[in-house]
Amino acid sequence: MKILCISDTHGKHKKLDLPEADMIIHAGDISGKGDPWQIREFFEWFSALPYYHKIFIAGNHDFLAEKEPETFLKLIPENCIYLNDSGVKIEGFRIWGSPITPWFHDWAFNRHRGDEIAKHWELIPSDTDILITHGPPMGILDKTIWGKRVGCEELKKKVEQIRPKVHIFGHIHEDYGKLQIFDTTFINASSLNIDYLPLHKPIIHELNNSIS
Image (tube, rainbow, N blue to C red; front, side, top):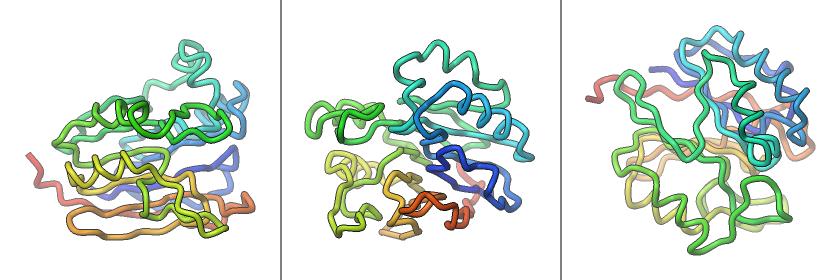
């Protein structure tokens, strides 16, 4: 299974040069401020992509998904899979996605650190193969331009406990990249850099299909 990872396109999705893959995963922030017209435009583009499986989550900029979920859900094309503290099994791979990030200036899907945000991570099944969250775990591809680590402590605990094969996220544009730690490949797939320019290449990750 060849997985194409992107994130944080913020309405600039059409400027990406996307390679071939079996599955595309978008780790949130599909829009600039969650305006319905921009959401619709993204879905028109995403649904037309030539990938057999198309999966996405929302991010902290995608206000429509949290404030008007019924409206948001009606806009999602039938050939796209939206995960919101939920999962799906595709070709033997158990995939779980969540838009939640630690509280910061009251953006969409913000939760306070500690028990409040931990409740969301408790929902992640222990047998998850591919974990998609909008934000990173603490200390892993989460360094801001000012050198501060801003990932989620509770998410890190959960990831260390379940050890998914791959953990895909974005949110912190400036720490884009791929990192292997023990059994897990961590991917910060932010497509835009700190200046919101689409300079980061989509990341390809291959998984063995021998999962039962």
